Image 1: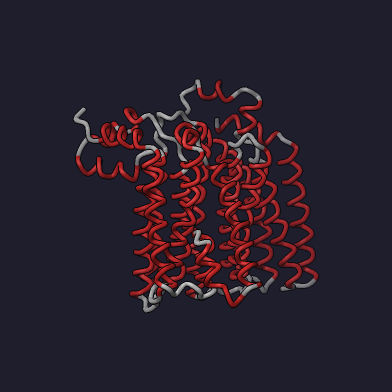
Image 2: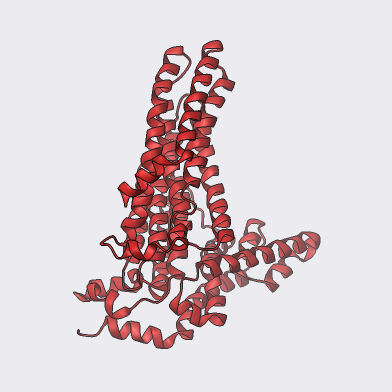
Length: 448
């Protein structure tokens, strides 16, 4: 897979044109730097073309990486080989990033020449190039992971949404590097961004692989274990007194893991539960590591405790972020925002959730809830004297989260509603699929 994709990729006109144009612009940037050493405009010109090539042009080449295999009817032929779904997606990602590495290698001589021209911190420039490389790997993984969807519009929307988030992250990182010196707090922020980027690469590649793999293949367990490991690595930032970085990175990692877990279809239990039946501890771990949304709800429950752990580390650092009722309402509402669409899915699309991934439906429901939240917030702003009544009348998680930010959820009613919503998000899907839950538990705790 890797050799095939690499050969085909390097023969395309896109790679050739991108390489020649990048070299041309690097020469122009070098000449501009000679004319005005240390010029901010020359620096911006230099980095703009590197970022455009590595974070836009190269990742977009993976936009149809998996869907094109279905359109050309070649996916079945690939799956007849010994390659599993993970190796297929990894091969496509590695091929694109090997080409990106060639582009980065072509930039290095110009980086050295900029240093000899003066007014340039070579170490900071190297760090910036390394972060751009991680960003290129992440955005490429996003496009490849989302390319599994056959609907062009859905792929485009997902790539744009995730791309905006990645752009915001790396624009902030490049602003830090633009200072030509890095403080301790800024270095910790860059480190946490790198952790999130590496996890994001693994997550989106696994996201795509799980959509093309058979239901008997277990990719969910490694995804959830990777999320837990990444959060524990993030906890190590406590040693450097960085509670904000811990909360931000752990929230992103766990949110991605939870959304993916609760939108998985039910697997073939007899096959995927076999490795968990070796001892009692493994059986317990299956409650939140087993593929499918049943194990996904268990993982959501575990994620709540991991989030509380992040807040606990913040408290140990002297920042109590959960000292008011509204803070607890915001915490539970933030958790509920992730799983609330599951209630709608299992009330009205129960059969679909049993046999297919419901990620696309989940995104559609979240978009509708976002529109409702905008309407409620506009109504509350127009009738400011009745804000609390309006928020109490439509207590969906996204509305309560907005109300908490406005300071309107100090009443115990809002806390009770948010806790009950968490309970309902876990209970309703299980009640609607009682037979499958019983089958899961019977298969898990049976004695072979």
